[in-house]
Length: 195
Image: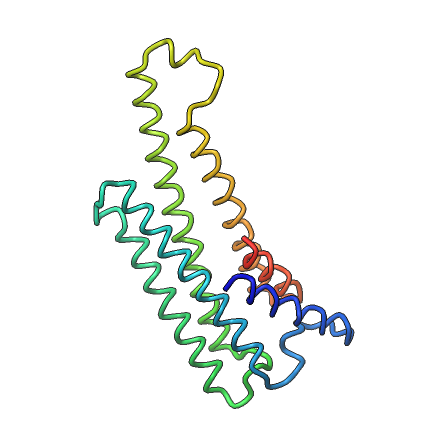
């Protein structure tokens, strides 16, 4: 799904460069299916990634429902915004052209809820791993504290930190370019698709 979305985004970027269009390239080529499919695959990709992130957070906190109330609420809000935007895109008479204010509002709601969900769940997972590592150091005593090599939990925490930071940063930058309605939004959409 990620590869198809990335291919569609890049095809639109190349068309925009070829025809020398300064505005968002997907808004200039009229009515076609590519714009709809591009949005649907991108939304589904983020939709699935958010489900996995919520599940990981739920498992990390021993299946505690209280921990995932906020992420689930954000996910449901994002799902509603995603469905409404797709419906608005499909039902509009000029799909594939410039998004109207309603579609823009749904898109903004979707990305804002995704960013909140990512920050909350990622921070929760990292905090849980950090607390387990801290407890292990207390139990291990001075010998484990003096070791030079990082533990496996520290390595896992570092990997999660870096990947979450890259994805969240790309999403926030896309959100900003979307809000200012900049032509670079397509480039950032490709970056979000890549991560």
